[in-house]
Each structure stands twice: as C-alpha cells, then as structure tokens.
Image (cartoon, rainbow, N blue to C red; front, side, top):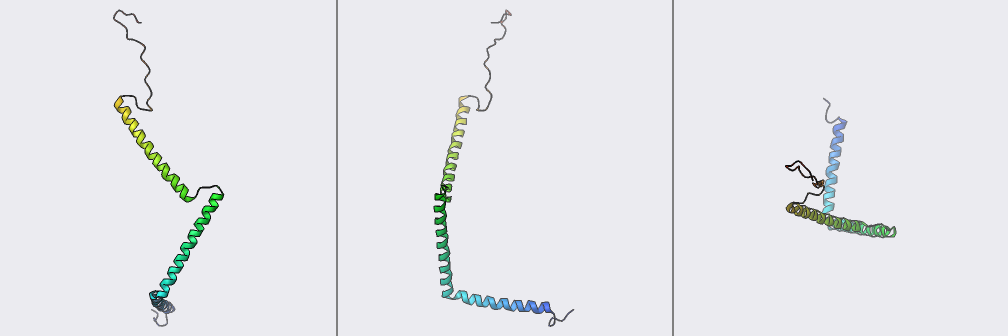
Length: 126
C-alpha cells in the first residue's frame, strides 16, 4: 500500500474536503446576516417583476397577432369541460328515459313491421 502522506489522491481528497468545510462555514455565516436576506428578497422581487412584465408583453403580443392568451385558453377549456359534463348528464337522462319507456335503445336497428299474417286454419292468406 502507498503511504497516505505521499498519496496524491488522498492529498487531493483532503484538500477538497477542507475547501468544502471552509466554503460551507463562510456561506452559513453570510446567510445569517440580515443584508443577505434583504438582497435575496430584492432579487426575488426583481425576478417576479420581470416575470410579470414578460407575461404582460407576451399577452399584448398575442393580442396583436389575434391569438388567444393562456388565460383565455384556460377559460375556454373550463367552459368546454362544463359543456361536456352537461352533455354527459343529458345522455344518461335520455338513456334512462328510453329504458323506462320501452323504446329501442339508440343505435339498435329498428325492427321491420310485421305485414305478413300467419296462415289461417282454412289455408288461405290475406
């Protein structure tokens, strides 16, 4: 085995480990300060403002291109789901009504009318 003192991989690992410890302690101390939290709060506010401005700009662009915005598409999808739900209820009500009235189910082939009479006892047909 190689000696740990002269092993370059062990020295590298030890050096990286010490650097990580130092960076973690520095970062922990920096995050505890009120200035850091204020800076992060400002950065979050700026990012939120930029995102809102981009959304407004995109909406204006879509309006100028005569295309629906995300909000409008969401509204259309919600209305469509409502309509589909109502259609489902209507279909179930119709199937219940047709089942109770004894009418043939929709989609079933109608039976042809019986115009031929069975032969009478005398053998003549009408």
